[in-house]
Image (cartoon, rainbow, N blue to C red; front, side, top):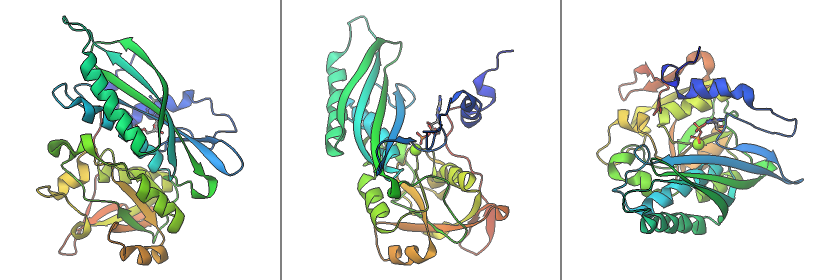
Length: 301
Ligand code: ADP
Ligand code: MG
């Protein structure tokens, strides 16, 4: 019997689709990280990711075209950053609605200006794509990047005792409009993989609680977050910082020894520690008490 996706949730659906992967021995990492990791040459891996922006879900027609375009590219660049890599080549597919007055070419050009600006900023060349008719405006970017083998950082390497960091304040991204204009953390990620070698890393697209949950699952560990040290954007509650989507800061873990060095660097915020899996995922309140965290962030369904 056909099963509707709305009953099982986004990640359970991806889990079911995983069996169609056709993994060859050459695939270093398939489904389950921010980008796929593939062979490239003796020193580097190829990174491959894709993310889609849909009108009414990720942006509204009333939002500036240029920012929508920036976002469509930036969400992909962010996934390459989360692997410790450099973004390189993109193809862009667009589904375009035709209204009574025809196609809004100016709006589309605005989107491309924004995409181009983001691509230029991060060294990406747009090298192709596809154009089709669609009921709603859809922009899909597929992006190749690469990373030195030694610098590849997956979600699965966190160890008990590691310190958890984020690259910036969290929460309120949608309300404030930051989700359209954020800076993907390529520079920070490259600095980290060159200087302190994170044990695990991902970008926060669905809220810290949910996304850190992915690191914990992939690494078979638990975590204790420290309420007082989670950096919040102005006017944002802790609950929002934990569950709001589209922050696009990085969350990463590093050994306690490296963490001590990093604490002096004001660009990075320590927010908790990795513990053994049986200790679960908890939040330490200001009064010292601990409460369980639901590893739930934004879900499409
Ligand atoms: P991110 O937010 O970092 O882009 P997602 O949460 O979208 O990651 O996806 C998690 C993992 O599942 C990624 O490895 C992604 O490639 C994979 N994935 C997502 N949707 C699909 C799909 N429809 N088919 C195959 N793999 C998918
Ligand atoms: Mg990601």
